[in-house]
Image (cartoon, rainbow, N blue to C red; front, side, top):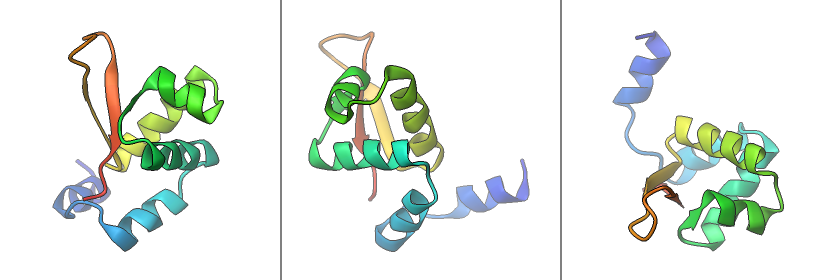
Length: 91
């Protein structure tokens, strides 16, 4: 485990100013996906693609980047276990 990974695990959850800083350094697609999730509480990947007008692959990349920064959380959909539901996790 590198020093940056160790520091990241010791940090508390992103809140307020820390979340703003983390989002500011992300690519535009990740910022757009974060904004879409801010307006819509919980969405699937395909719903995010529809709302943002981004291609599925770009949405997948953006969600991975947001997940790396612990800004988005995901869980399995109870109605369709093949899908995941994404929401912002800024607490």
